[in-house]
Image: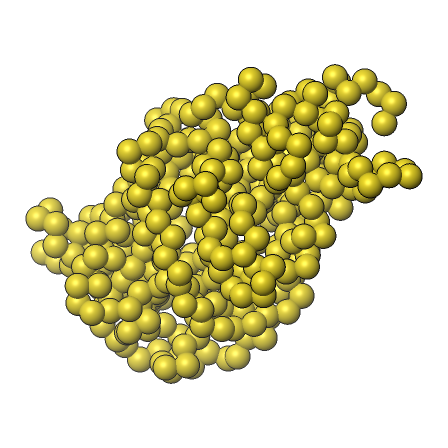
Length: 371
């Protein structure tokens, strides 16, 4: 605490007053934007999350882009939102790149000896993940009631501290419960670009039923049924890439299919899955609760995307169990156009169906090529 407050590197411990001298922000609160310092300071308190069962921190499971730090949005009880005064902090994170600000993360570590002044360790500077800036989860609030929370996915932007004590703990047990969805809208972002990437649109589905084998009970995982959020937001991109375009196409495709299924009277949703021993939370694209069908959507019909969708749906379907339906769900891949003929034989081998959108905009349910 004797080092100059004007110099701050990852791992340094400072009081909020010292942090404000360097990066600005308000004297209290968890999400603290600063216009003049071009910063959005994110304060995490491990005790707060642990009391209700969720955590901010590094995921142990890295992807091809490296590690992800998860940060839970603002709002201690009730559904979190991006709208109004209650959503101002969450908007500040979502729009940080558009507004020329850097996300900086601090975690509470203790107090100044002999006082009640809290101290915080600086983890470093971050930006939102370009393809999946945030996800929605069901989690309890301080009032003990389950609600929707936004979990931001942060990527390091410069040197960061990646310490063991900042890791999200792995799941120890599982619970399987049906949860109703409390709608949270983000219509305001349809006219306001936010940050890099596209918001993932939760998808929907519909199809025909087929008999499937009964799965062995899996005590290692939990599945929670949740209705998908309806975000149609387009985000401004720092750079146009094939990946971001595919994400946008997937969002548009699934939104259209969602509307198609709902017009047929189907109840749609998704599964939120925790796997014992893992720190990350899995979420399926689409689930048809009416017909017990699981969908995996992709933004293109390329060979690579079909193969990826096949692996994902085989993985997820093991954990999707319904009290109203027997056995595993029917597995279907949702595509923007028909796959190549040889992909049908691959999918048939694993009892996976295909729904694709035809040139005239209709959805075609097919397991063999149409000629």
